[in-house]
Image 1: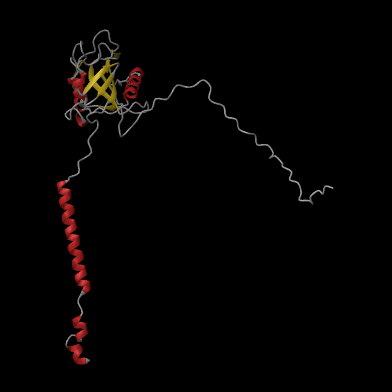
Image 2: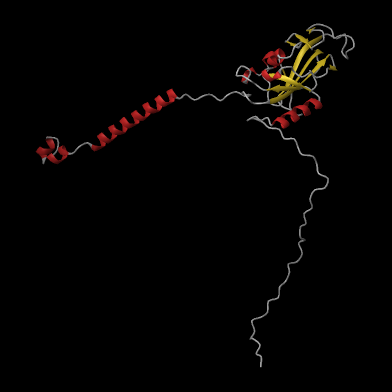
Length: 260
């Protein structure tokens, strides 16, 4: 036995195959092949990033109004030939965001695109021109006939992310780069320093919500529900009173009556 141990074990031990070693090697080979196959598939089928909304075919609506030195201006007229344009207006202060091409969609659906599609509208950080009116530049005085006449004004743009009256406005530094959102609101104005732009009037907000409801516009991030009209009399439901339960008398199990 001692001599067999000195030579590395007996014939039986030397004759056994290293099964576990071969099994581990096979597992490594299989895992390697699977990883190569998976990597090749991922390379040939790269995941496409989620498209930025609004996408081609979607219809969003936003609201816009204009303040000229404290004087609210009339809504812009509906855009001509709007069927081929991405960001237009249908009138009543409603901006229609309906991309026709990828160049008009996603992050390109901006207030700048709306300006390009609206003849006569000029809107930069330093200048504002409403169609048919004189250009107003930062440092100029408000024109006569306006509530802030004679006061030095500047261009200001405020943005609300949605129509919720509790939403706080955001000051926009570069109007052309402002991406318009679903049911968002924009107020453009030339106002004296320290003046706060008002939220677009309720008539504009209502027009935006009705436009969305009539077109069935949707978004993955938010939705709007217009409550149904109130009915005159709600249906009446009768609830039984909590009186004492009805007592039922059960006859005792007496002997049956015998009839002669």
